Each structure stands twice: as structure tokens, then as C-alpha cells.
Length: 139
Image (cartoon, rainbow, N blue to C red; front, side, top):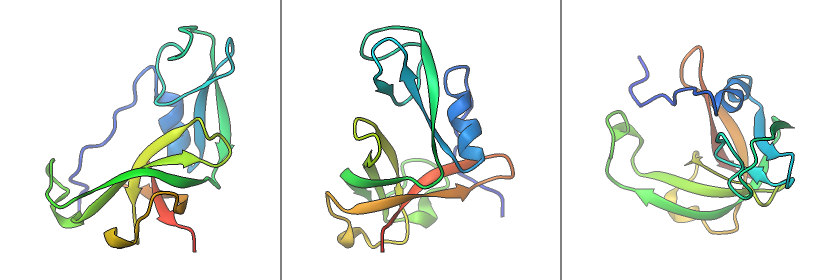
């Protein structure tokens, strides 16, 4: 069955992020001027405005905690109707707590999701060319 949901597009600013995700790795943009991480990636540092940016590879074993979440009971875009209810979380990364990444929490009933819950990143291959970072509970 063909993937029906929107597929994130690679742009000049986010291509390293998506290229790494496709390899099941997480890279985060870092400002060389103020040493702050910036996510989602952009053309300049969100804190100081510098364009001196690099990419730090955090690897493929990514852990974090649920910072916030919402459970959706209706599809807002085509393709999501078979995933309901869908829990969408903001996850604070363990190794870089200033970075928070949004993703779906998979393999977990909505009523079991809690703020502060430990999760780990998993890679969902949605096409032959694209993988999405998602989250699963740490067992």
C-alpha cells in the first residue's frame, strides 16, 4: 500500500537533518558562535542570529522524556484516519536537553502517556527514500 500522508520535503536548511534521518541517525544544527543547538533547523541561529552553523551527529540511539503531548481523535490531514487516536509529543532529548523534537508516540495507548515518561527514538521507514523519527516507550 502506498504511503498516503504528507512526506516532509528536504530544503536547503533541513537537508542534513533529513539525510541523516534516512540513515536512521539524528543530527542537530549547532551554532558555532553561541554554542546553542537549534531545532528545527534554519538558515541562522534562533538565539543569536549567526549563520555560522554546523551539524552534530547524535547517533541512532536517542533517548528522551515526554515534555508535552496531545492526543488527536480526528484526522487533520488525509492519510491519518487509520492512525487514530494519535499521540503527538514534544520530547526533550536526554543528551541535549535544550533540544525538543516533535514526533508520534507509537506502541502506546494514549491513556498511558505521561509527562516525564521515558521514550526512545525509533525510525519509521515510510518510503524507500524517507524515514521519520518517531518515539516508543522505554520498557
